Amino acid sequence: MTDSDLEDFLILRALDDPITESELEAAGEQSGETLEELRDEGVGIRWVDSEVLTNGDGKITGTFCHYRAEDTDAVREHAERAGLPATRIDRRGEPLEGE
Image (cartoon, rainbow, N blue to C red):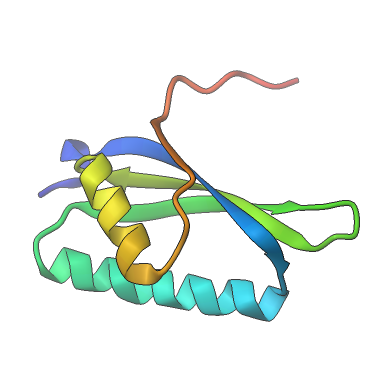
């Protein structure tokens, strides 16, 4: 499956309890390993980037992740296998221009 066959998805990963930077790094490593496993199985999925969400104390409360994937099932399967929340999964619309 080529990259042009993939669609853009945005995933909100809201956390019930804030996590530390080291916990976020560990989650990122697990995510990367799971992405490799899925691709080895022929699933079309690729991580593009993530924005980290923090509260007023600077603690990590979640992420907004941009993935390219063949469908929402691939995104859900990745989240389940990696032990990550997928609070909301939406197709990415056209980005707005900033200042």
